[in-house]
Structure formats: structure tokens, C-alpha cells
Image (cartoon, rainbow, N blue to C red):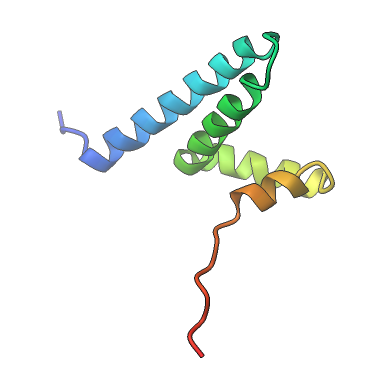
Length: 85
């Protein structure tokens, strides 16, 4: 039996944390205040960073419903450093 690599363990931990945050965000949703949505979105970001399957499904949904995914795309986009002149 082979011992999993550290990066594989980190990926699994990130995926598990993301799923748990999505569930916690869903439970916090009915509580007054904006607690549930940011927690669930952070969980979604963790899942998208660690799962190829989730990335493919996200890309499919983004292609299918582009207007719904314009805001998350802007939030997930990396900031580019300014170019040297």
C-alpha cells in the first residue's frame, strides 16, 4: 500500500473543507444577516480549486447560463500585477 503524497492529502482536505463550508453556508442562510452566502461562496471556491469534476461542471453551467455567472467570474478572476513600462 502506497502512502499518499502531501499534495494529495492537502487537496482532499481542501475539498472536504469546501464541502463543509457549503453545507454550513446553507444552514446559515435562513438566519437573518448575510452570513450564509459568503461562507457558501468561499466553500465553492475551495471546491473549484481542488476538483476537476467541479471545474468541468462549473464551466458547463457558465457556458449554458452566461448571465448568471458574470458576477462570480469577476470575483474569481485573479488580479494581474501592473506591467512595467
